[in-house]
Length: 285
Ligand code: AK1
Image 1 (cartoon, rainbow, N blue to C red):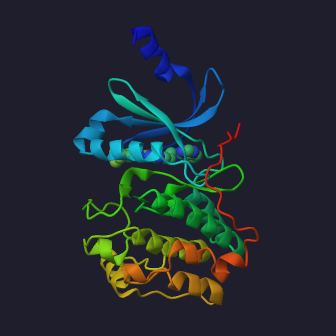
Image 2 (cartoon, rainbow, N blue to C red):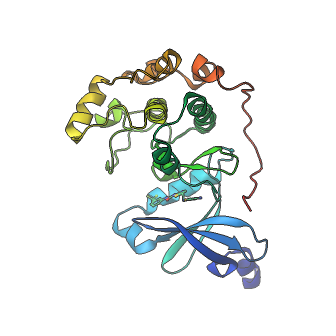
Image 3 (tube, helix red, strand yellow):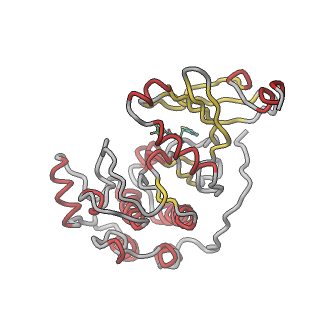
């Protein structure tokens, strides 16, 4: 292959017009960007190689890119491509025009049951697709979910995801609110960890805070291991039943996704409930 061919197929930062910052993290920032040629809106995540190497994250990023390249689902944030220069790695991501779910949840306080149910079904769709492709997300929480133009949830940030099954020990950073008992105990775990996280997530949709939240991390830890939580009075019996069948200590006894899809909490609020996997992404342009 000639050099001209190589350079013509490789994107560079020059191919984009950079817009407003969308977010910032330890490893770099995310910007709204537009391809100069097609005028197509994307989110451009800029990661600093030095920081990734310092924190021994290069292998993790490689795995994320590998996993992302093979997933195509309307409820999973698409990674279109990536490229790099001397100092940085650029991830070209689908732009989610309605932003981050945690912001939307903070603003609303909590979501009503129809909205929580619709969102829950979208998560069931996304996770079922992941599991069919032997991918465990492991880090389902509002901070890692974005909202598309038509209010569709999009799971993002596969930085912690793995191919199933796994016993990989990872440094637990940030909140432990979403960690299932088997991950707290450093046992081997499987796709059932995502079922637990789905239970925590749906509880947080309806109540506005995760079920095991405490001022002290040690207390959260104990509550998770004892599966100790309460429902406020306004949570319906269908919602309680749905959550209680996911927040089960023994991983293999948690409600499977195929069963969750047909649960009254889901069917009551979602009329057509078909599972459409390959959808072409449209730009919120
Ligand atoms: C999607 C993201 C590792 C991996 C550090 C990572 C979301 C990631 C980016 C947005 C689209 C926003 C909007 C609208 C508002 F080395 N995938 C990500 S971040 N639309 N934000 N995207 S915000 F692997 F450990 C590592 C280190 C980061 N990966 N992935 O950040």
